[in-house]
Length: 408
Ligand SMILES: C[S@@+](CC[C@H](N)C(=O)[O-])C[C@H]1O[C@@H](n2cnc3c(N)ncnc32)[C@H](O)[C@@H]1O
Image (cartoon, rainbow, N blue to C red; front, side, top):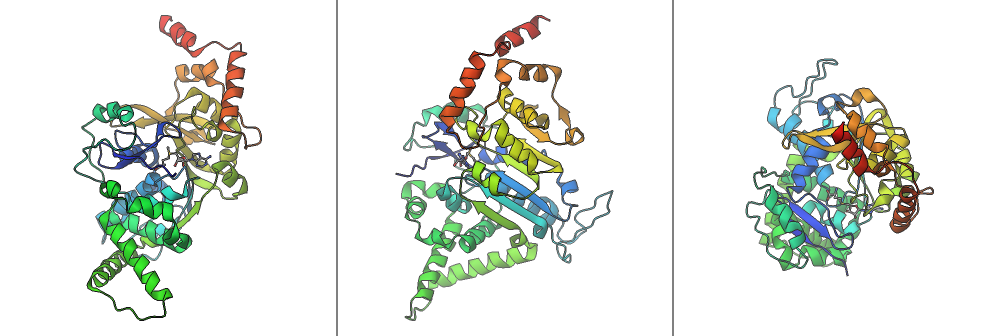
Protein backbone atom coordinates (compact mmCIF):
# COMPACT_ATOMS: atom_id res chain seq x y z
CA UNK A 1 0.00 0.00 0.00
CA UNK A 2 1.20 3.50 -0.84
CA UNK A 3 2.26 5.41 2.26
CA UNK A 4 1.68 9.13 2.70
CA UNK A 5 2.62 10.78 6.01
CA UNK A 6 2.16 14.56 6.03
CA UNK A 7 2.66 16.98 8.91
CA UNK A 8 2.89 20.74 9.28
CA UNK A 9 6.31 22.32 9.47
CA UNK A 10 6.86 25.54 11.43
CA UNK A 11 6.56 27.89 8.45
CA UNK A 12 3.08 26.61 7.65
CA UNK A 13 4.15 24.41 4.75
CA UNK A 14 3.61 20.66 4.65
CA UNK A 15 6.43 18.21 5.32
CA UNK A 16 6.45 14.48 4.65
CA UNK A 17 7.86 11.55 6.51
CA UNK A 18 9.01 8.39 4.75
CA UNK A 19 8.66 5.22 6.82
CA UNK A 20 10.56 3.32 4.12
CA UNK A 21 13.63 5.53 4.36
CA UNK A 22 12.82 6.33 8.02
CA UNK A 23 13.68 9.87 7.10
CA UNK A 24 11.89 13.18 6.71
CA UNK A 25 11.59 14.63 3.22
CA UNK A 26 11.71 18.18 4.50
CA UNK A 27 13.15 20.15 7.36
CA UNK A 28 10.59 20.32 10.18
CA UNK A 29 11.69 23.93 10.75
CA UNK A 30 10.04 24.78 7.46
CA UNK A 31 9.82 22.80 4.25
CA UNK A 32 9.41 25.90 2.13
CA UNK A 33 11.93 27.91 4.16
CA UNK A 34 14.48 25.18 3.50
CA UNK A 35 13.77 25.23 -0.24
CA UNK A 36 14.32 28.98 -0.37
CA UNK A 37 17.42 28.93 1.79
CA UNK A 38 19.15 26.05 0.03
CA UNK A 39 18.11 26.49 -3.57
CA UNK A 40 16.93 30.04 -4.21
CA UNK A 41 18.77 32.56 -2.01
CA UNK A 42 22.28 31.29 -2.91
CA UNK A 43 21.58 31.90 -6.62
CA UNK A 44 22.21 35.24 -8.29
CA UNK A 45 18.94 35.40 -10.24
CA UNK A 46 19.60 38.95 -11.45
CA UNK A 47 22.60 37.64 -13.34
CA UNK A 48 21.04 34.33 -14.33
CA UNK A 49 18.01 36.01 -15.87
CA UNK A 50 20.18 37.94 -18.33
CA UNK A 51 20.77 34.65 -20.15
CA UNK A 52 18.69 33.71 -23.19
CA UNK A 53 17.92 30.25 -21.85
CA UNK A 54 17.97 29.02 -18.28
CA UNK A 55 17.98 25.30 -17.65
CA UNK A 56 17.32 23.91 -14.20
CA UNK A 57 17.50 20.30 -13.08
CA UNK A 58 15.54 19.50 -9.90
CA UNK A 59 16.72 16.07 -8.73
CA UNK A 60 14.27 14.48 -6.31
CA UNK A 61 11.26 16.67 -7.08
CA UNK A 62 9.09 15.08 -4.34
CA UNK A 63 6.18 17.50 -3.84
CA UNK A 64 8.05 20.15 -5.78
CA UNK A 65 9.05 22.80 -3.24
CA UNK A 66 12.33 23.59 -4.97
CA UNK A 67 10.81 24.09 -8.41
CA UNK A 68 7.88 26.02 -6.96
CA UNK A 69 10.18 28.25 -4.89
CA UNK A 70 12.12 29.28 -8.00
CA UNK A 71 8.95 30.10 -9.93
CA UNK A 72 7.45 31.89 -6.95
CA UNK A 73 10.62 33.89 -6.33
CA UNK A 74 10.77 35.08 -9.93
CA UNK A 75 7.07 35.89 -9.95
CA UNK A 76 7.29 37.89 -6.70
CA UNK A 77 10.58 39.67 -7.33
CA UNK A 78 10.73 40.20 -11.06
CA UNK A 79 7.10 40.39 -12.11
CA UNK A 80 4.53 41.26 -9.45
CA UNK A 81 6.38 43.91 -7.48
CA UNK A 82 7.15 46.04 -10.52
CA UNK A 83 4.40 45.20 -12.87
CA UNK A 84 4.42 48.44 -14.77
CA UNK A 85 7.97 49.63 -14.27
CA UNK A 86 11.20 48.41 -15.82
CA UNK A 87 11.54 45.39 -13.66
CA UNK A 88 14.93 44.18 -14.15
CA UNK A 89 18.04 46.20 -14.84
CA UNK A 90 21.40 44.57 -15.06
CA UNK A 91 24.28 47.00 -14.82
CA UNK A 92 26.46 45.06 -17.20
CA UNK A 93 24.08 44.27 -20.01
CA UNK A 94 21.42 46.90 -19.35
CA UNK A 95 18.70 44.34 -19.77
CA UNK A 96 15.29 45.73 -19.02
CA UNK A 97 12.18 43.75 -18.63
CA UNK A 98 8.62 44.90 -18.34
CA UNK A 99 5.97 42.29 -17.69
CA UNK A 100 3.24 44.41 -19.16
CA UNK A 101 4.86 45.04 -22.53
CA UNK A 102 7.85 42.83 -23.02
CA UNK A 103 7.60 39.92 -25.38
CA UNK A 104 10.93 38.58 -24.17
CA UNK A 105 9.24 36.93 -21.26
CA UNK A 106 11.29 35.69 -18.33
CA UNK A 107 9.32 32.47 -17.94
CA UNK A 108 9.65 31.52 -21.59
CA UNK A 109 13.43 31.35 -21.04
CA UNK A 110 13.09 28.90 -18.18
CA UNK A 111 13.15 25.19 -18.62
CA UNK A 112 12.85 22.99 -15.53
CA UNK A 113 13.55 19.28 -15.74
CA UNK A 114 12.50 17.36 -12.65
CA UNK A 115 13.10 13.76 -11.70
CA UNK A 116 11.77 11.54 -8.93
CA UNK A 117 10.88 7.89 -8.75
CA UNK A 118 7.58 8.58 -6.94
CA UNK A 119 4.85 9.59 -9.39
CA UNK A 120 2.12 9.94 -6.76
CA UNK A 121 4.04 12.80 -5.12
CA UNK A 122 4.37 14.49 -8.50
CA UNK A 123 0.58 14.30 -8.96
CA UNK A 124 -0.01 15.60 -5.43
CA UNK A 125 2.52 18.43 -5.75
CA UNK A 126 0.22 21.23 -7.02
CA UNK A 127 -2.32 20.56 -4.28
CA UNK A 128 0.03 20.94 -1.32
CA UNK A 129 -1.00 23.90 0.78
CA UNK A 130 1.50 26.46 2.10
CA UNK A 131 1.11 29.34 4.56
CA UNK A 132 -1.14 27.35 6.91
CA UNK A 133 -1.81 29.46 9.98
CA UNK A 134 -3.02 26.68 12.20
CA UNK A 135 -0.13 24.27 12.27
CA UNK A 136 -1.18 22.14 15.20
CA UNK A 137 -0.09 18.63 14.40
CA UNK A 138 -2.41 15.91 15.49
CA UNK A 139 -1.02 12.50 15.98
CA UNK A 140 -1.80 10.85 12.68
CA UNK A 141 -0.67 7.50 11.43
CA UNK A 142 3.09 7.51 11.88
CA UNK A 143 5.63 7.82 14.61
CA UNK A 144 5.36 11.52 14.85
CA UNK A 145 7.42 11.65 18.06
CA UNK A 146 10.48 11.29 15.83
CA UNK A 147 9.89 14.68 14.27
CA UNK A 148 8.28 16.29 17.30
CA UNK A 149 11.61 17.44 18.68
CA UNK A 150 12.42 19.18 15.39
CA UNK A 151 9.10 20.97 15.40
CA UNK A 152 9.81 22.37 18.84
CA UNK A 153 13.16 23.77 17.81
CA UNK A 154 12.41 26.89 15.87
CA UNK A 155 9.04 28.49 16.32
CA UNK A 156 10.21 31.91 15.15
CA UNK A 157 10.41 31.01 11.51
CA UNK A 158 8.28 33.23 9.23
CA UNK A 159 5.18 31.85 7.53
CA UNK A 160 5.80 31.44 3.81
CA UNK A 161 3.44 30.90 0.94
CA UNK A 162 3.57 29.84 -2.68
CA UNK A 163 1.31 31.92 -4.91
CA UNK A 164 -1.70 29.86 -5.99
CA UNK A 165 -1.09 30.53 -9.64
CA UNK A 166 2.29 28.76 -9.41
CA UNK A 167 0.47 25.65 -8.23
CA UNK A 168 -2.19 26.20 -10.85
CA UNK A 169 0.46 26.46 -13.59
CA UNK A 170 2.04 23.19 -12.42
CA UNK A 171 -1.37 21.48 -12.30
CA UNK A 172 -2.04 22.60 -15.88
CA UNK A 173 1.34 21.21 -17.01
CA UNK A 174 0.73 17.91 -15.23
CA UNK A 175 -2.73 17.50 -16.74
CA UNK A 176 -1.33 18.29 -20.19
CA UNK A 177 1.64 15.93 -19.91
CA UNK A 178 0.19 13.18 -17.75
CA UNK A 179 -3.57 12.90 -18.33
CA UNK A 180 -3.44 9.55 -16.56
CA UNK A 181 -3.60 11.63 -13.36
CA UNK A 182 -7.41 11.40 -13.71
CA UNK A 183 -7.35 7.64 -13.58
CA UNK A 184 -4.71 7.13 -10.91
CA UNK A 185 -6.56 5.61 -7.99
CA UNK A 186 -3.69 5.72 -5.49
CA UNK A 187 -3.44 9.45 -6.05
CA UNK A 188 -7.17 10.25 -5.80
CA UNK A 189 -7.50 8.09 -2.68
CA UNK A 190 -5.01 10.38 -0.95
CA UNK A 191 -6.34 13.62 -2.41
CA UNK A 192 -9.87 12.90 -1.25
CA UNK A 193 -8.98 11.23 2.06
CA UNK A 194 -10.63 13.26 4.83
CA UNK A 195 -7.68 12.94 7.22
CA UNK A 196 -5.51 14.84 4.74
CA UNK A 197 -7.98 17.64 3.96
CA UNK A 198 -5.96 20.32 5.80
CA UNK A 199 -2.83 19.56 3.80
CA UNK A 200 -4.32 20.29 0.38
CA UNK A 201 -5.53 23.54 -1.14
CA UNK A 202 -9.31 23.38 -1.42
CA UNK A 203 -9.29 25.72 -4.45
CA UNK A 204 -6.86 23.66 -6.50
CA UNK A 205 -8.66 20.49 -5.46
CA UNK A 206 -12.02 21.91 -6.53
CA UNK A 207 -10.54 23.02 -9.85
CA UNK A 208 -9.18 19.55 -10.41
CA UNK A 209 -12.62 18.09 -9.69
CA UNK A 210 -14.07 20.54 -12.14
CA UNK A 211 -11.63 19.44 -14.87
CA UNK A 212 -12.45 15.86 -14.05
CA UNK A 213 -16.18 16.45 -14.51
CA UNK A 214 -15.55 18.45 -17.70
CA UNK A 215 -13.55 15.54 -19.02
CA UNK A 216 -16.32 13.09 -18.23
CA UNK A 217 -18.84 15.38 -19.91
CA UNK A 218 -16.71 15.67 -23.00
CA UNK A 219 -16.20 11.97 -23.43
CA UNK A 220 -19.89 11.26 -23.11
CA UNK A 221 -22.21 11.77 -26.08
CA UNK A 222 -25.00 12.84 -23.82
CA UNK A 223 -25.57 16.51 -23.27
CA UNK A 224 -24.99 17.46 -19.64
CA UNK A 225 -25.82 21.02 -18.63
CA UNK A 226 -23.31 22.91 -16.46
CA UNK A 227 -24.54 23.13 -12.90
CA UNK A 228 -23.98 26.17 -10.68
CA UNK A 229 -21.03 24.57 -8.99
CA UNK A 230 -19.34 24.01 -12.33
CA UNK A 231 -20.07 27.54 -13.51
CA UNK A 232 -18.34 28.85 -10.39
CA UNK A 233 -15.21 26.76 -10.96
CA UNK A 234 -15.17 27.58 -14.62
CA UNK A 235 -15.08 31.22 -13.55
CA UNK A 236 -12.16 30.59 -11.12
CA UNK A 237 -10.31 28.55 -13.70
CA UNK A 238 -10.68 31.34 -16.26
CA UNK A 239 -9.52 33.87 -13.70
CA UNK A 240 -6.35 31.88 -12.93
CA UNK A 241 -5.78 31.30 -16.63
CA UNK A 242 -6.01 35.04 -17.22
CA UNK A 243 -3.43 35.64 -14.49
CA UNK A 244 -1.10 33.02 -15.98
CA UNK A 245 -1.43 34.77 -19.32
CA UNK A 246 -0.80 38.23 -17.85
CA UNK A 247 2.36 37.14 -16.10
CA UNK A 248 3.19 34.66 -18.87
CA UNK A 249 3.87 32.17 -16.14
CA UNK A 250 2.71 29.19 -18.14
CA UNK A 251 5.45 29.84 -20.70
CA UNK A 252 8.10 27.96 -18.71
CA UNK A 253 8.99 24.52 -19.96
CA UNK A 254 8.40 21.73 -17.43
CA UNK A 255 9.53 18.15 -17.76
CA UNK A 256 8.96 15.38 -15.28
CA UNK A 257 10.95 12.14 -15.45
CA UNK A 258 9.48 9.41 -13.33
CA UNK A 259 12.51 7.18 -12.86
CA UNK A 260 15.70 6.60 -10.97
CA UNK A 261 17.72 9.82 -11.29
CA UNK A 262 20.77 7.77 -12.31
CA UNK A 263 18.96 6.37 -15.36
CA UNK A 264 17.58 9.77 -16.20
CA UNK A 265 20.98 11.49 -16.20
CA UNK A 266 22.49 8.81 -18.44
CA UNK A 267 19.79 9.47 -21.06
CA UNK A 268 19.87 13.24 -20.76
CA UNK A 269 21.79 15.54 -23.09
CA UNK A 270 21.05 18.92 -21.49
CA UNK A 271 23.57 21.31 -19.98
CA UNK A 272 22.13 22.97 -16.90
CA UNK A 273 22.67 26.36 -15.29
CA UNK A 274 21.37 25.11 -11.96
CA UNK A 275 21.22 21.62 -10.52
CA UNK A 276 19.36 21.03 -7.25
CA UNK A 277 20.22 17.80 -5.47
CA UNK A 278 17.67 17.05 -2.75
CA UNK A 279 17.96 13.31 -2.19
CA UNK A 280 17.44 11.62 1.17
CA UNK A 281 20.54 11.71 3.37
CA UNK A 282 23.66 9.90 2.06
CA UNK A 283 23.25 7.09 4.57
CA UNK A 284 19.70 6.40 3.24
CA UNK A 285 20.19 7.10 -0.47
CA UNK A 286 23.93 6.81 -1.20
CA UNK A 287 23.25 6.04 -4.88
CA UNK A 288 22.54 9.73 -5.47
CA UNK A 289 25.72 10.89 -3.72
CA UNK A 290 28.34 8.70 -5.39
CA UNK A 291 31.46 9.83 -7.26
CA UNK A 292 30.03 8.37 -10.47
CA UNK A 293 26.72 10.21 -10.12
CA UNK A 294 28.56 13.48 -9.45
CA UNK A 295 30.71 12.84 -12.54
CA UNK A 296 27.48 12.72 -14.55
CA UNK A 297 26.24 15.93 -12.91
CA UNK A 298 29.58 17.58 -13.69
CA UNK A 299 29.19 16.63 -17.34
CA UNK A 300 25.65 18.08 -17.37
CA UNK A 301 26.57 21.45 -15.83
CA UNK A 302 27.29 24.63 -17.78
CA UNK A 303 30.78 26.10 -17.25
CA UNK A 304 29.32 28.88 -15.12
CA UNK A 305 26.52 26.73 -13.65
CA UNK A 306 26.16 25.64 -10.03
CA UNK A 307 25.00 22.54 -8.22
CA UNK A 308 23.33 23.13 -4.85
CA UNK A 309 22.60 20.72 -2.05
CA UNK A 310 21.73 20.79 1.63
CA UNK A 311 24.35 18.15 2.45
CA UNK A 312 27.60 19.16 4.14
CA UNK A 313 28.73 15.57 4.63
CA UNK A 314 32.45 14.98 4.14
CA UNK A 315 31.70 11.85 2.06
CA UNK A 316 29.53 13.91 -0.29
CA UNK A 317 32.08 16.69 -0.56
CA UNK A 318 34.82 14.12 -1.13
CA UNK A 319 32.79 12.63 -3.99
CA UNK A 320 32.20 16.06 -5.53
CA UNK A 321 35.92 16.86 -5.51
CA UNK A 322 36.83 13.49 -6.98
CA UNK A 323 34.28 14.15 -9.73
CA UNK A 324 36.10 17.39 -10.60
CA UNK A 325 34.01 20.05 -8.85
CA UNK A 326 35.22 23.13 -6.97
CA UNK A 327 33.14 23.33 -3.83
CA UNK A 328 32.12 25.89 -1.24
CA UNK A 329 29.66 26.51 1.58
CA UNK A 330 26.10 27.79 1.39
CA UNK A 331 25.64 30.50 4.00
CA UNK A 332 22.29 30.70 5.76
CA UNK A 333 21.61 34.29 6.81
CA UNK A 334 18.75 33.41 9.14
CA UNK A 335 20.77 30.86 11.07
CA UNK A 336 24.06 32.73 10.53
CA UNK A 337 25.89 29.55 9.67
CA UNK A 338 26.82 27.33 6.73
CA UNK A 339 24.06 24.86 5.93
CA UNK A 340 24.82 23.33 2.55
CA UNK A 341 27.28 22.84 -0.28
CA UNK A 342 27.61 24.65 -3.60
CA UNK A 343 29.63 23.01 -6.37
CA UNK A 344 30.75 24.35 -9.72
CA UNK A 345 33.37 23.95 -12.44
CA UNK A 346 34.77 27.35 -11.71
CA UNK A 347 35.93 28.57 -8.28
CA UNK A 348 35.00 32.19 -9.22
CA UNK A 349 31.33 31.32 -8.85
CA UNK A 350 31.87 30.33 -5.22
CA UNK A 351 31.39 33.03 -2.59
CA UNK A 352 32.11 31.13 0.62
CA UNK A 353 35.19 28.93 0.21
CA UNK A 354 35.71 25.91 2.46
CA UNK A 355 38.05 26.51 5.38
CA UNK A 356 41.35 24.72 5.79
CA UNK A 357 39.69 22.67 8.51
CA UNK A 358 36.87 21.59 6.13
CA UNK A 359 39.40 20.54 3.49
CA UNK A 360 41.37 18.61 6.12
CA UNK A 361 38.21 16.74 7.10
CA UNK A 362 37.83 15.50 3.52
CA UNK A 363 41.20 13.73 3.86
CA UNK A 364 39.99 11.69 6.85
CA UNK A 365 37.99 8.45 6.74
CA UNK A 366 34.82 10.58 6.82
CA UNK A 367 35.73 11.98 3.40
CA UNK A 368 35.82 8.54 1.75
CA UNK A 369 33.07 8.77 -0.87
CA UNK A 370 30.32 6.39 -1.92
CA UNK A 371 30.98 4.54 -5.18
CA UNK A 372 28.55 3.14 -7.74
CA UNK A 373 30.71 2.11 -10.68
CA UNK A 374 27.91 1.29 -13.14
CA UNK A 375 25.31 3.60 -11.66
CA UNK A 376 23.00 0.72 -10.90
CA UNK A 377 24.01 -0.70 -7.52
CA UNK A 378 21.57 -1.12 -4.63
CA UNK A 379 21.90 1.36 -1.75
CA UNK A 380 22.78 -1.42 0.70
CA UNK A 381 25.60 -2.67 -1.54
CA UNK A 382 27.00 0.86 -1.88
CA UNK A 383 27.00 1.29 1.89
CA UNK A 384 28.63 -2.10 2.51
CA UNK A 385 31.39 -1.36 0.00
CA UNK A 386 32.09 2.03 1.59
CA UNK A 387 32.13 0.56 5.11
CA UNK A 388 34.70 -1.96 3.88
CA UNK A 389 36.84 0.80 2.35
CA UNK A 390 36.63 2.88 5.55
CA UNK A 391 37.56 -0.10 7.72
CA UNK A 392 40.61 -0.91 5.60
CA UNK A 393 41.77 2.63 5.08
CA UNK A 394 44.85 3.95 6.87
CA UNK A 395 43.49 7.51 6.85
CA UNK A 396 42.86 9.02 10.28
CA UNK A 397 39.35 9.05 11.68
CA UNK A 398 37.41 12.30 11.67
CA UNK A 399 37.12 12.25 15.47
CA UNK A 400 40.91 12.03 15.81
CA UNK A 401 41.29 14.82 13.24
CA UNK A 402 38.84 17.05 15.14
CA UNK A 403 40.60 16.28 18.44
CA UNK A 404 44.03 17.09 16.94
CA UNK A 405 42.72 20.33 15.43
CA UNK A 406 41.44 21.46 18.82
CA UNK A 407 44.79 20.90 20.51
CA UNK A 408 46.72 22.83 17.85
C1 LIG B 1 14.18 14.52 0.47
S1 LIG B 1 12.94 14.04 -0.63
C2 LIG B 1 12.87 15.38 -1.76
C3 LIG B 1 11.94 16.48 -1.37
C4 LIG B 1 11.55 17.37 -2.52
N1 LIG B 1 12.62 18.11 -3.09
C5 LIG B 1 10.36 18.25 -2.22
O1 LIG B 1 10.42 19.46 -2.47
O2 LIG B 1 9.35 17.72 -1.77
C6 LIG B 1 13.77 12.78 -1.55
C7 LIG B 1 13.02 12.33 -2.79
O3 LIG B 1 13.90 11.43 -3.48
C8 LIG B 1 13.11 10.51 -4.22
N2 LIG B 1 14.02 9.43 -4.60
C9 LIG B 1 14.59 8.47 -3.80
N3 LIG B 1 15.45 7.71 -4.50
C10 LIG B 1 15.43 8.19 -5.79
C11 LIG B 1 16.12 7.82 -6.98
N4 LIG B 1 17.00 6.80 -7.00
N5 LIG B 1 15.87 8.52 -8.11
C12 LIG B 1 14.98 9.53 -8.10
N6 LIG B 1 14.31 9.93 -6.99
C13 LIG B 1 14.54 9.27 -5.85
C14 LIG B 1 11.98 10.20 -3.25
O4 LIG B 1 10.85 9.73 -3.94
C15 LIG B 1 11.75 11.55 -2.58
O5 LIG B 1 10.70 12.24 -3.19
